[in-house]
Image (cartoon, rainbow, N blue to C red; front, side, top):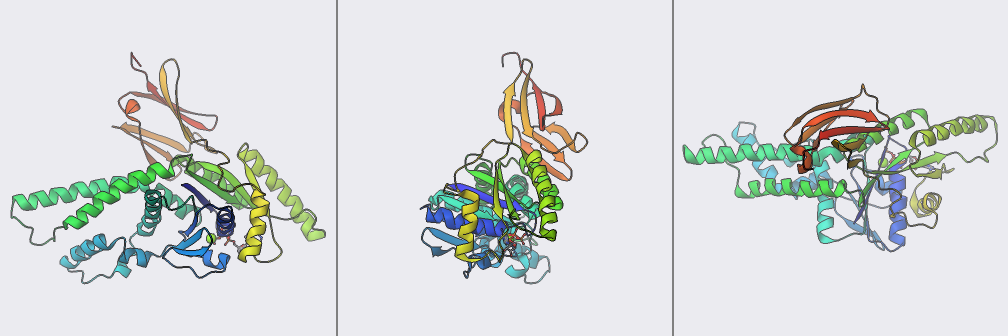
Amino acid sequence: MRVIIYTGKGGVGKTSVAAATAKRTAKMGHRTLVMSTDAAHSLADSLEMQLSGKIQNIDENLDAIEIDILYEMETRWKEIEGYISDLLKSQGMGTISSKELAVLPGMELMSALFYLWDFQQNDQYDVVIMDTAPTAETLRLLSFPDVSQWYIDKLYAILRRVISMARFTVGKMVDIPLPSDGFLKSMQSISNRMIEVRTLIQDSEKTTIRLVVNPERMVINETKRAYTYMCLYGLTVECLILNRLLPEGEAGGYFAEKIEEQKRYVEIIHEAFDPMPILESYQMATELIGDKKLSMVADMLFGDSDPSVLLANESPIAFWDDDEHHIMALKMPFSTKEQVELYNKQGDILIVQVGNHKRNIILPLSLAKLEMTGAELKDNRLLVKFKRGDNQ
Ligand SMILES: Nc1ncnc2c1ncn2[C@@H]1O[C@H](COP(=O)(O)OP(=O)(O)OP(=O)(O)O)[C@@H](O)[C@H]1O
Ligand SMILES: [Mg+2]
């Protein structure tokens, strides 16, 4: 299963490009699903279809879904919702509805990731295309397997302790309802599934990010930052989609100036992102909705080629040895020494912070037991060095 995630600044064309790609891969015979994880869904408009929180077939080989958190709470999260509701009720907080619980941060993000897990288990699709919310929210989504894993493990450990203490002392806790077996099983399976989802989204052969960009200064700057953070979270950025280029043929004063400006920005983009592949699509004269327009965008971006084929798959993380060290290299484009911080290794965890984004990197076992001797930022990579043992 191939997962393609379109992301980028607000309004750059993520939804349009996701819809155009999905239409094209379906037409080429790939079983395709296009999924919107943006709470402000606009996929349905782009496709000119009615969509909902349930997967529905909209064309030959093509299914679509706009994730609906209320529906997810009533189905996928039932067990957990039930317990949290009981717990809050027991603390005098009255009845709480799934509607209110749906505001819990992360629930809709987790749902999107769980769909990926389902599809992988059932071998349901060849291609899954994700239309996401603007960058910041999407980063939350994609960093979630790392973070949630940690929280879930902690919570699970606490709950287990509460239960065993309750059994040991009074047989049953009087003021806190004990979680049911179903709840505990749910927690455990969430935890296990998140590990598998993390493996899937960090697999550079399967899951890639396509950053959508326009030839405008602010968009370019945000795209650079997004690239850095995607690398930090171990995700493979495959290409740029340079959308909304003005056609050169446009005559007249206003356009001539605009086109000159745009040329400069296109150069800046190439310089900054080289050698990453850049696919281009032009600004259309009218709104980009419906089959015909989407197909024109797919023609511009992909020509006759298959949009699901990997254009680049260099993983942001690499390992090698020199004479004295094992080296772990993390791609860290557009970063300066001042922005990157590395915290002491805590057991098998290395904490890397870039700006206000932080990631706990779980070290491979072979490195976890070695002494970290230093780190440097070189050629857009953070090189973390570990002392080699005598016989390694
Ligand atoms: N190449 C294009 N030519 C003409 N119109 C376009 C083009 N690309 C996008 N648009 C239009 O720009 C608007 C924004 O596009 P779209 O919804 O795809 O962007 P988005 O990045 O998904 O936005 P959001 O961040 O709000 O989700 C839409 O009205 C769309 O029809
Ligand atoms: Mg959108």
